[in-house]
Image (cartoon, rainbow, N blue to C red; front, side, top):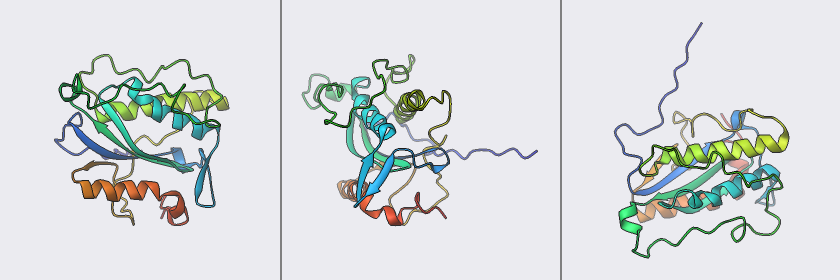
Length: 212
């Protein structure tokens, strides 16, 4: 019997609790087109896509030391940029607004998931954490969204996401897509943000639509 070892996608030696901006890609299990479809270069979310949208917007309510930036839901994957803040730099400084409950303010009409989202199990930070790490954000996101999606479709425990964020052995045509990419310059941020925003219009050439 062959034993397959997963390659680590973490940057060796890097502190993923460090203050900074990160670009992350999450892909669905077996690249299933789970979240909706592209119509006229726009992403149309289904019920599962709305759950993912809610989960993303809800993250700062449980992690006051993070900030949300660009985010896109595609039929079978998502891209996002998230900021990790040093709490000592934000507390009392007025540089980070208080999180807003998306159940009231951040979810546009028509995008509210029908599944009961009152329970935040899976979104609560790990009890031993001191500062939010990128791995913790990804864990919360995957755990809560998967639980709600499986509740909605009646498939408790079924896999929703790939175990890893992204397969680093595949080179993207965009030149910017990496599993957990540390954004180091303003120009790099602009390039990645534009890539995320333009993802729906580039779906026809997307590697997740046409994996090779």
